[in-house]
Image (cartoon, rainbow, N blue to C red; front, side, top):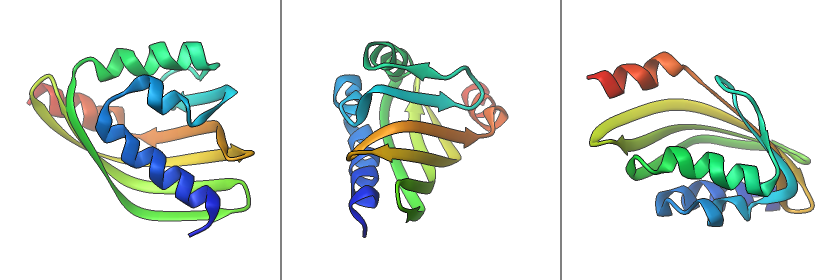
Length: 123
């Protein structure tokens, strides 16, 4: 596993602790998270608020990594995010593309089907 792959593996594992401040430490100061169905969010302060807002309804999450590959400063993580949101289980297939800079996440684009997420919450 490359250094960048290990950083992303550690980042993915950190989500299970549901701590927005810990997660934001993986980003550069000007880092961007683009959760594809929404607008991109940049900067650690904005990222902390954004991540904390959706973590507030989560009681647990475990992300199963299916594939983790890299080429230089690009890391791609295909995964299934298994989360309990407001008491409802959500298994969400995702693919994250990470642009790394000096051991930190400069840009994270996450691709998934919002319909899968919404349908699980309505079940």
